Amino acid sequence: MESIKDKIAIVGMGCSVFGEHWDKSVDDLIIEASFEAFQDAGVEPKDVQAVYAGTVTGYTGTAVTRALKLHYLPVTRVENECGTGVDVIRNAAFALAAKAYDLVLVVAYEKLKDYGYAGLPIEVTRIPVIHPVYEKTNTAPGSFALAATRYFERYGLSREEGKRTLAKISVKSHHNGARNPRAHLRRKVTIEEVMNAPMIAWPLGLYDCCGVTDGAAAAIMCRTEDAKYFRDDYVTIKGIGNSVGPAQGAMMDSYDYTHWEETEQAARQAYEQAGIKNPLQELDLAEVHDCFSIAELIAIESLGFCEKGSAKDDIDAGTFTQEGILPINISGGLKSFGHPIGASGCRMVYEIYKQIQGKAEDPSRQLKNPRLGLAHCQGGQPGKFMCSVVIIGTS
Image (cartoon, rainbow, N blue to C red; front, side):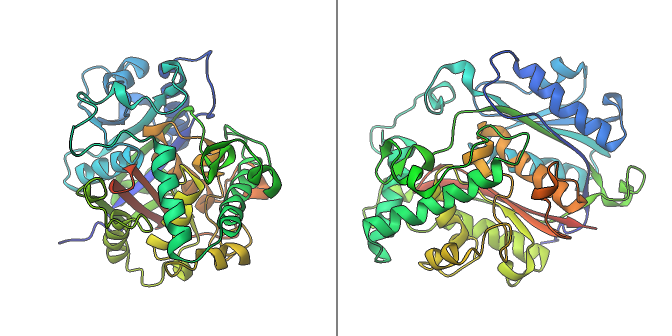
């Protein structure tokens, strides 16, 4: 199988402010993100030849063409649960590699607050919602709480140790997000606040769970051979992985909840294409899917950043802070930046793109000379995940 490494470039990106946008429509968010991307790439809407739209909760791909007045262009809507934002980039990259198009627009978007749900409005997108044998009716916090308690038991963490370890993840996310002018929840929190917050599903409290958010992100992509016509500081895709699990956790009592096999498989594909042997040492930053604090902990082990069961030691040592070996979720992550389902993965890529260019909006967030970053997003619940991973870096 031929690698996609360095064949596809991102030459422009944009991102809306994430938050509760009661005064904006989904069109407004698409326009905000897309026109930043157009300006960044130095192109106009009429220059793109195709649109790849990533959204989950009921919006169509025609929302992009309507908002941007892109009439009669081919539009492909991509939906892969919470992994949509990276998977839409993956689909656009393959179309460019096949030379079906020369310049494409990717837009990932969601307007969750309009649905009025406290959590994710999954009922909007699935009919029927529940299969009488294979589906479980537990909530997303409930599923990830099972992962947390199983992790504590398997690796010998007391209730206090486990909860405090998760709290440190949330404190890091909010510290990073508080300095990000586009983040939804821009407030620092302390370990004590996280530990004593209202409980959602033990051990996950209020500050262990991401918020319901509106937002959009966009990218302008082309083949690398053409990138020089748009800018000098473009980034290229080094590797892409995608993996969908067989929902074994919904059927097998032996499912252990303590690692994401789909993440491991998707990461293996991306690492092989990018030529990465030691991701902890070779990557300069990573944006991982932290819908809950336990999701980040298990993701960093499943991505191979540390040995299974050892994340607590690295978290205690500050390995994944801005000053550490591998900064994780320097943007604030889903936890602080927000999680408009379909948009999150593309927003992760936006963060890495800007960091590599040295253009983080708050200078205090800018990493020193990053060259290679990873974005990881996954959809579903433990035992029935899909996962997408993309690695981007300097050309």
